[in-house]
Length: 144
Image (tube, rainbow, N blue to C red):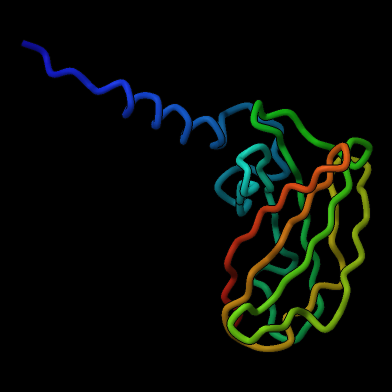
């Protein structure tokens, strides 16, 4: 008798893999070079690359950001707005500088003026607003 895989495992696997990078997707840089984080509601993926990499301590840097929907279609600045921020939840504060978000000709965003002014555990926040609804992606970042 052949072993059967429960339908719940198959369904869960397909849902988990559904938001992952697929060959041929129009990403900012080839996976796995870009960092990736899904929005908390699972509807969007944020591909981001800090410049320079790794993120420097107490020096300004930028982040290139590309957003894809669940089907792998690019979400461009003409379709949505994006803010990028960071904070240190354990310290109860954020950055002491507000980054500027610029749309780029290739349909991506550039967050300039990011500044991690102290070492430790940070959280990066990507907030995408589409049709009046906010979709947040957040990811940890350790700065040394």
